[in-house]
Image (cartoon, rainbow, N blue to C red; front, side):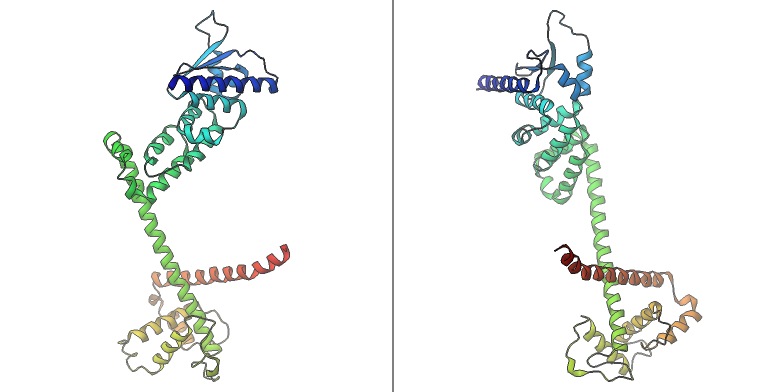
Length: 351
């Protein structure tokens, strides 16, 4: 069976080169022979090999050991014969069929690195990235590092971080633990850093969500104290109870309850009420953000501004940071809304 496969590969190779020579106006007689591990001899043209691979160009410039041979011999050993055939085919056609990449992707990656064929290396990296599994990712990662394939290396690390629980149980990882402890340590450090980055991203998302909620609460507070809504409104305007629940802000009904509680609570002066304490914080945050030149209708806004100006120590660094984050969240939210509003107009123009 092995012999028949080699004969078939040799026959396919000869047919391919016959057709290629016919349509490319190359000399009918090849001046190079590429020898494979299985004994297959592939005819080739030195001009083609030298133009595609600088490594093969240097090999062809070396003096021929067998002076009596009219052809130069280039051994490419250690990989399957059909992988060498696919490699030579790429050197001639600058493309590789999907079947070759699927079957010999690892071998072709090695050949592309050894003989400096960057186009083939990129094609192999993309193909192997699509074939990654928990079972083969460790082997492919090691090869990607040896062959200087950064794209494939990143894809392997991404899969490793996403499914390390499964990778840890594979034979590839166990082999790595036994034979390359330095790489194991490096990968474990990478996984620890990736987990730390994930936790930071989660915290940042949670913090951003909080800042957006506070920004919406500031807008809602301004809305209630300026326009009035449902059961709460400014002193010079009666709220319209016939409107029903506010649809403008999701926090409006809750904030109205908090304001009504704050107005009647007897514990707020001594700071024993958690609801009133929260309302004080919202009022203070509003006064820190409010930039209206006219008198603001939000209760205690002017008084709290004057108090903060007199008591400079009262506004510590953490509070200033909170104010900046809420202002930034409001700006981002406004910009996002503006973009969403503009999208229908753009669609209409493009239509």
